[in-house]
Length: 259
Image (tube, rainbow, N blue to C red):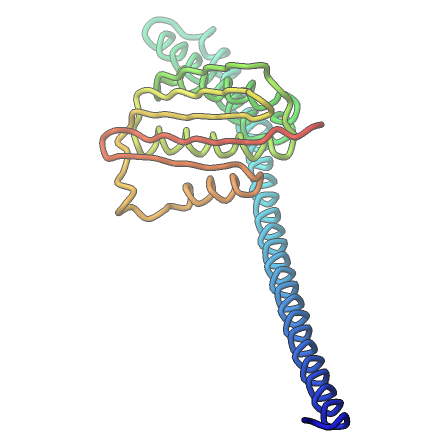
């Protein structure tokens, strides 16, 4: 039989080994936790940095659009108004076919002035904040319809809920980009916009019957990337589907914030 001292020695060795094993386990656990914390903080820093970059980019774009809106309204609009006044003076002093041509040019300039002011309104951030998302979308669709670019339809279901002004502008820019692509690139004849307010969620569906594109082969343009990055910025789920010769559909799901 083992002597008492040998038994105590074995016990001490077992205890020391157990402490060493426990120390190693604790060490690796703490190391793993700190590593995970470091990685999480790094990812959060990268996300914050990307968000700040996106925010700065959006602010620059909005300021540029605001400046363009001012130039359209104040400079171009005034010049066209002066031209219209001069044509009025010419119309009063001319007769016959020349007068008819002057009157036609005067009407064309008057229409142009109205369209320039309407366009400047949709570019002006302050007016979007004042009038709200739905009103601005309605104005944009009416302008597209009025200019015979495409037939448009707006449908709203549920109880309209206010959206934070900053997010409202970004969502409107996404819609504006889609409409621009539908007209300029897809040559759409019909465009529909559906807004559904339900359970603190805003569902937006935009559909055009334009040329569409093959999503498996087409690389994303700057316009598509802008829409996606803006949607990510306001934490909206973004889904874009398109098929060659079958149009394009954009869906946005935005969680309404308590104001």
